[in-house]
Length: 86
Image (cartoon, rainbow, N blue to C red; front, side):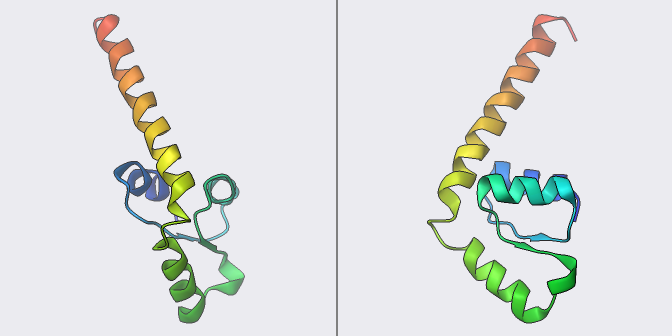
């Protein structure tokens, strides 16, 4: 799974599950509490468990915090572009 495949749903407030072993993705999952299924463990049962975990409200407290920070960063970036005439 690509990094942006996690970031885009997170910024929209949509539950997401990482499937794979990318270092960057695993770090993001660790930081935010996003469920992750690494390659050696991929199975329908493991993915279903991760999806159920992703849907729990408790798991999304940290993701929602990250979503707000990401949106604020995007707004700040766009404001800086506008301020510089881009």
